[in-house]
Image 1 (cartoon, rainbow, N blue to C red):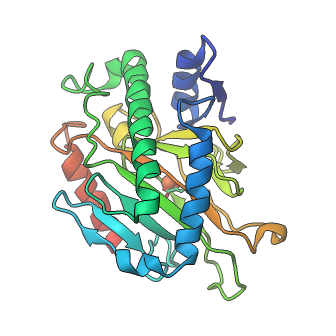
Image 2 (cartoon, rainbow, N blue to C red):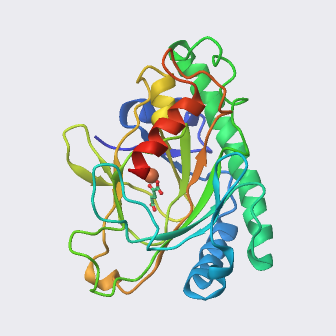
Image 3 (cartoon, helix red, strand yellow):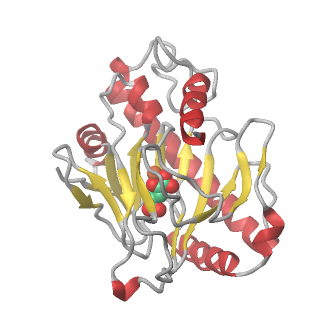
Length: 280
Ligand SMILES: O=C(O)CCC(=O)C(=O)O
Ligand SMILES: [Fe+2]
């Protein structure tokens, strides 16, 4: 299984994107309409934020729409479904109402604006080419279904390894994303892997400036599995990189929660089932 690198400047980008997502659940977009210099600056600024003490003033809270907003420390973090060690990460959730430190706010807002537009473009492409697999209510409406208040920009910091980590703990254990699609700018540090159909782990290709796109469980459910939600993970760094932070900024695109994904589920009921599983 190979994840295709799709040049957005090419005339074949739309078909190539849909094809690799169908086949692998992943695509890598080269020359995406996201400001690469801004993403680099965000990675530097957020790294400084995580390495400082100010983050403790932004501890996460639940928003009225049921999202979490703010800083989630390493000891809270997440345990992937089916795993018993917490991931070696801390992160910050940004939704439209999130209050951010002033020095981080403008770039985050500008990035979110671009990411939302790119998300709509890609959902539109998937709708055109895979619309037949979608439930009738969603057909022709996939891009419109994007809900800015239910979508989430997550800034992740995987701290340098100290050697004191719990045996078996990894930066991000194997999991699938819950949402429709995720836009994940390629990190400066390695580690992201995707599981091939034969169960082998493979590095996701790409270089900083590219954006990885993967389909999540909600899109898999809505497309009768035409668009698979593929397991991925972040492995611990090789020795030469182990004293380095890794910053990563996935934007999880979710639909309005009352959208019907399938006979069994609305987006809201689906999300609740998955979050209950994670909380166990
Ligand atoms: O950090 C990464 O590269 C991937 C993060 C991820 O898969 C997630 O947060 O769902
Ligand atoms: Fe993920």
